[in-house]
Length: 242
Image (cartoon, rainbow, N blue to C red; front, side):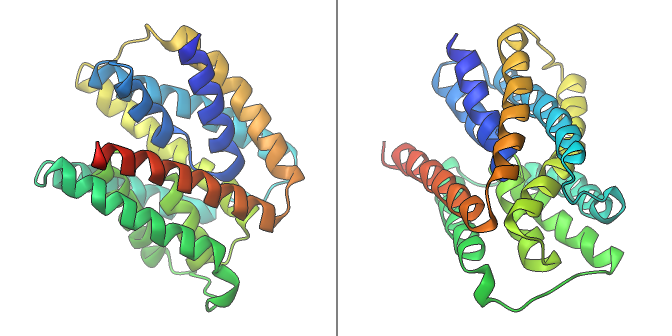
């Protein structure tokens, strides 16, 4: 039951504000002594299911989702994820944990003070891919879903509102998570033993989170996003101090 509740809470928040959910599921599973490979595969599977359900529901509700506009960022993110994962092996866990806290603080600043920043709307495909490459590299380097970085990048460089950035982030996450699942399967991590708990929860979480998102205005979405990231930072700080 703990796996079901964890997946439900993480995917509901992930669908609501665009963070994906892996940034919550994977470290908590690790804290519950779940093997690294199983934790990674289970997290990616839950996020993929949530992303599919959420994307379909967002489309039905009229959210601003354009695959053509988001695909360059998604392609860049997939490539960046592999790069970041390689860099992760070169530094200590302590450095990664401290760097993650700093990066997430920057994400909060961008999201909460977006209105005070210059309006930018990137239209160049190559530049969009490069932005995706950077967010994907951060995702791979920190070993988390790229959601927080994608949301911030979509708001900052593509002039999306908080709600639309959350929806687009989930669409991009669908592509990047599918890539991660393929990689985990090739590495021999495919294990569906926890899927009986996490997959049904991810379906419910995707529906629930996307429904809540469409009822929130941009300011409320930004506040929920910031509170969620602050909670993740607190958990990360506890890990560093502990």
